[in-house]
Length: 208
Image 1 (cartoon, rainbow, N blue to C red):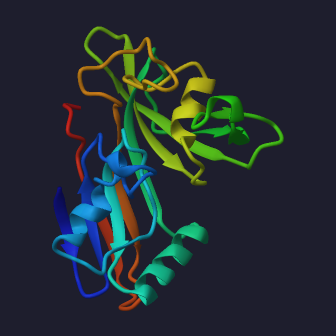
Image 2: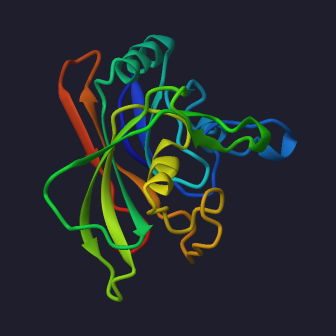
């Protein structure tokens, strides 16, 4: 796991796919990004999470004031987040952003799955298509979630008929040698203590 930035207040790391962000229930789910960090940064505290199958940028506070301040930035939607993903099927390549505005809620009989529901929590994702693969069977998307619901990007893209490749939960037929092809590629915010604008970019582990 690569640390991309570190000061006395927080860390930005590149989370590998297949690793939990924080410990889960049970002794077999204690290995995670947070416990790895604790071997070198024992005060590290979680601010936000990525799905186990998702790779990419995460920030961890190094003291309680930092964790609180960073959490408030996320809650106030003052954090720039951008993802990239390969999805099934062809979407038009464009510089214009499209919007998916579909409420989400837990699919209780099938937890941890989520589902689209008009009575669910408001959930908004912006997307645009960057390119197609060589055999024109898949599209690479830039994704900008305006809300941060569980599995939001995965469910929204499935709902419009373009599920993410390698998504074992929502599209098990779409196999991928790389696993889930979803990567948190950009993160940016104003440093809560220095007021300096910070921005990080990180390419996905699979070829783009």
